[in-house]
Image 1 (spheres, rainbow, N blue to C red):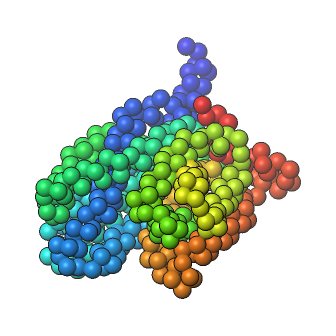
Image 2 (cartoon, helix red, strand yellow; image 1 turned 60 degrees about the vertical axis):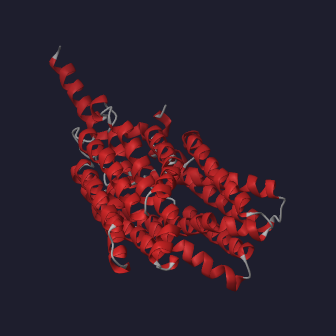
Image 3 (tube, rainbow, N blue to C red; image 1 turned 90 degrees about the vertical axis):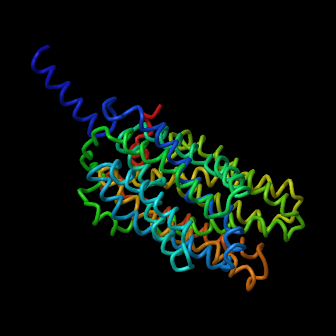
Length: 435
């Protein structure tokens, strides 16, 4: 092979490793392993609690408000802990973080199971919050973004579709275990299941070499992670996603009481909520096509505005129940798109160089407000006169989020070439080359 050709091939291979586009940077075991661990992690650490909480309160005499607050504490801790963990993943890769997080999750579940009082119960959930930050979507997204490069949308979609099955698998399993065991013994069994699946999966499947971070893009203007996080577009986008996240989770938690106010039975309202979850899964399958056909500002603004429109429709349409259920399904479809929108928000605008850290900074306030949403929504419904008025307020917040997202658009890479903003913005996401 001529020397020039060999050097060119070597440079191409180095570029592929840096951007995540080469075969060497896509270890085959990563994607199925992360699918399995996301189903298990979300199913055991997150979805088992709402199933077991009535039994916990009945057995211990603890208030449901207090036990739910302990669970919300875990979500707040998760949002805060994700920031340093994201930076660590950027530097060292996901293996150590996610494997340690799996070990910590098993320990936290055992601590929850044996908690002698509320203080120990809350402390154990705080520990579980750290494990959430180390094992849930954000570290998995960071791994796939670096390893899969321009094909990341496909990988992210597959993992989020798998994660959507967590409640389908583990809510019934948890309920079945609780019929034969105490809630404490159920958590012990779930901890064993989690440890058996996630610890070896993270330790073995994520051991491939971590590709070096690609150089910042020309549109990045040479900013580091700290300067980017303090920039006007980043702060406006964070505010938009925070408002949208608060509204979205408040709607999810308030849908059943809204529908029961409209005359639906609890079972009918639960079915509407479940069908909304099916719409969320469908929405995730459609995101790649949407991303190929729109700019990042257009799809962000449109999806946030559409979320507000469906929330307003739920507030204003009095019935019948099938019509409200259809609106709930459309709202779920939009939520599914928003999950992937947030997963790709950093790479679409600032590249993959500091993805773990910037993604954690972007999602931290949204995670915290999502933890507070159930309490805030219930507290606001009464003084506002019911859930329809609450949903109108949430729709207005989503509309404000859409305006902030539009204001967060990045300037053109070339200040003398403002006419090319849309084309440049679309190319940042790397979607033109995605299969």
